[in-house]
Length: 391
Ligand SMILES: Cc1cc2nc3c(=O)[nH]c(=O)nc-3n(C[C@H](O)[C@H](O)[C@H](O)COP(=O)(O)OP(=O)(O)OC[C@H]3O[C@@H](n4cnc5c(N)ncnc54)[C@H](O)[C@@H]3O)c2cc1C
Image (cartoon, rainbow, N blue to C red):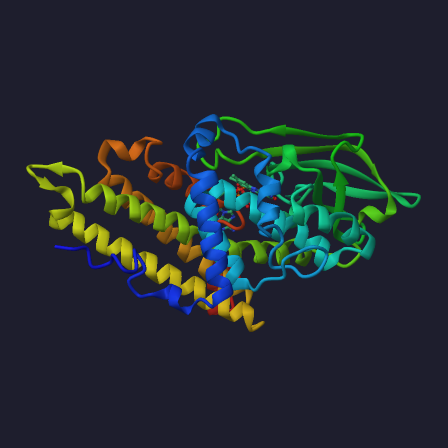
C-alpha cells in the first residue's frame, strides 16, 4: 500500500501551506543549498570537527546573514522567512544554523540595534556578505545561566577603555573578525566591539566536543586590551542589551530544531520501510509505527508552535515568555524525536552514515545554550505565578 504522507512528506497537517510565496522561495532555496553544498560533506566535517570558512560568503550570497535586518546590505526579510531558513539549515546540521544565528542575531543584531552609524557602516555590509564573521561573548567560565555576575570588566583610561576577562563557549570565537563582548563597567553592562588581532586579545578553540562538532567553539581572553572610545555600543546599558539579542537568536532555535527533528523522522521512515527483521519490514511492526506516529505528532506540534511565534513576531506582538515557551518545548520535542529515531535505526543509529546521532548529539548543545531548559522553565514559572525562583 502506498505511503499516505507521500504528497506532503512529513507535513501531514500541511503547515507549510501557511507560508507565503517569499517564505516558500526561501525554504526551497535554502533546502537546495543544504542538499547540494552541505549534505555531501557534513558527516565528514562533523567527524573532523570543522566547518569550512568558505561556506560563510556563500551564505552571504544567499542573503542569509542578518537576513531579518534592514538596510546596510541586509535582506530585510520577515521573521517567518528567517525561521524557515533556520529550519532548513538545521535540517542539515545545528552547527551550520548556529553559525548563521550567531552572525545575524547575536553579532549583527546588536550592532544594528545599538551601534553608532559609523559602527553600522563599518561592519554590517561586510558581515551581511560574509566577508567578516562575528561572535557574541557573554558566557564566562564561572558565569553561564547567571550572566549578571560576570567578571569581565572594562574601565576608562582617559577616553579609552581597558578590557579584562575571559569568555567561554563562544561560537565562531576562534575564527571571528569581530567579537561583540559584554563587560561590566561603572555604568553597568556595556557591549564592546573587539577586533581580531587587538593587542591582548587571544582565543583558544575548545576541543573534544561530542556535540556541535561542525562549529567552532572558543574561549576568548582579554588581557588589558585597550579599546578606543568608539568601541562601545552607544545604544544600550545593562543586561537588557545581551538579553534582547538572545531573544532574537532563540526565535531561530524554535524554528531550527524542527528541521533537525524532521531530518530524524525522515531517516527513521526510510529505514523502517527498507530494513527487514523476522521476515518483515521493521516499519510493519506496531511498536515501530507507534513510535513514528508520536514522532510525527511531536514534529507537527513543534512546527505549529514555530509558525505561531513567527506570525506573532511579524505582528510585533512577541514576548520573551513566548520565546521561552517555544525554545523549551521545541528543543525537548526535537530531542525526543531524535532519540526515538535512533532506536529505529538500531546499531546503524549510532553511525555518521545516517544523520540521526549527529542531530541527537547536536541537540544536547541546543538544549543548553541560549538559556537552558531549566532557565526557560523558570521564566515561564515566573510568568504564571508572579514568583521568581531563580535564586
Ligand atoms: C556548543 C555551545 C556553544 C555556545 N555558544 C555561546 C556563544 O556563542 N556565546 C555565549 O555567550 N555563550 C555560548 N554558549 C554558552 C551557553 O549559553 C551556556 O553554556 C549556558 O548559558 C549555560 O551555562 P553553563 O554551561 O555555565 O551552565 P550553568 O549555568 O552552570 O548550569 C548548569 C546546570 O544548572 C542549572 N541551573 C543554573 N541555574 C539554575 C537555577 N537558578 N535554577 C535551576 N537550575 C539552574 C542549569 O539549567 C544547568 O542544568 C555556548 C554553549 C555551548 C555548549
